[in-house]
Length: 395
Ligand SMILES: *Cc1c(COP(=O)(O)O)cnc(C)c1O
View 1 (cartoon, helix red, strand yellow):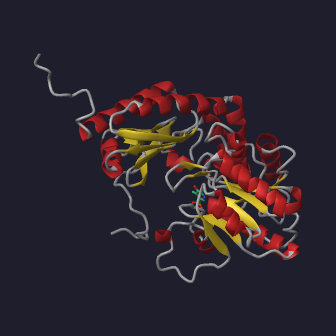
View 2 (cartoon, rainbow, N blue to C red):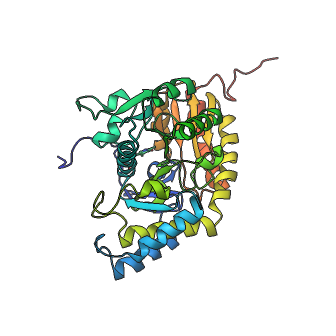
């Protein structure tokens, strides 16, 4: 009997080691990892640069607390700003997860409302996902995550994603809008350019905050440092986490200076946030993405993967950006995920008929060819009408 909470539905496999896009379980069986720990292990497993940055840092200093200066934190912030949003989001707060990063943005929104006599209300979206803490789950537009947790935190208005009219109606009585540029857990649904730019314009006109949840989309996942860059929008703050530490738990908020100043000394904090180990990981991840041209790789391999997926049987749509892709199936996704697992390919389902593929940013053409072979084999079995196994023509 396990001593763990039963809050996760786990597949019965335990991995022992990993290298690049591959994982090995206890029995020695190898798996091609196109899930990357849910869009986290952006450099793949055991990237030598991340391993040496971490071992070197661990051998010197792990943690000192934010009562003191932390040079690794300064360096990680400088690198984040220089890469992601120079001249716009100049200030960084480090925390330990995506939910915590969103909590920080929501607390900034509350202070902003307070200072500017605006309603302490944030517009959020149906089908969105912002985390599992009480505030972020309250901001999450998926009812199953709310079950049994009432009373939820007040101060959120829910609008329809990609429906500007619905969003503007809520924004009227809000101080800010919090939105994922691509809804991830909701099924990998990209915002339209018109929608996100419309939100930006409305926020500008009404002096309200555009807060982007880039926990899943950020740090190269879509082939840009931020998904915001695809849309040409200028947010007031963004939250980051998943891919930021390459597997080390770390989150961050990047904000405009005037917004960051709302959280003065003593107003907010976290014991572990931005400790030397986590920030050594962030620095190594950012440097590796730059030096190994991983944004370019994410764009090129994303395009290649998308084309290959579009040609598979039983696929009705491929959507997403860069290496954040979803495949909408004609049939059930659950079975396909299980059969892929049996054949050594890790992916997951984000909706009953939707597969998600978020491989490491280092993924190669060869990795993709192998993943497609496995997926094609599974889909051919599940949709016999559409594959090459047509009835023999006797003419
Ligand atoms: C995963 C995710 C979160 C929550 O991050 P945690 O690190 O699990 O707290 C928040 N927002 C988005 C868009 C996510 O994908």
